[in-house]
Length: 159
View 1: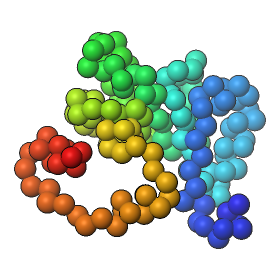
View 2: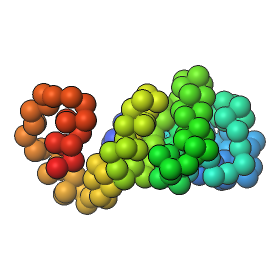
View 3: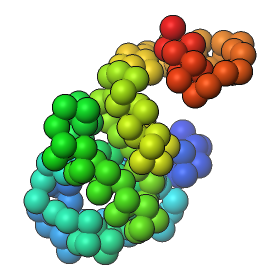
């Protein structure tokens, strides 16, 4: 596919669920190693819902973890999910992995993630899923004025 499209390998990111990675660890390490060798980015999707631990993941050639949205959804109402999300973020950073929080649906969740230094998020709070054309329009829109406090800027972006 990379050869047919002439895209650089680094522009391709494959998302693999935690349970798939752990199903056949030896084969997965080899396959992911080959993909990393050509520059493909690897993400572990839905992290926290399977049975692996970050300690085991350090043996895999991965670039980022995506925290499952079920933890993010309840961070302001559930102390355990708040601790789990914060722990995943801290441990991933120790392993020098980027972290993406999935399922961000409100300002309180986003502010919690910012406090935990999680710099990559996705979810309906920022944007619903977009088509390729809609994504292009979003990227071409004129920049906005970003004066004010962090909360004011976030509210302005969200509308």
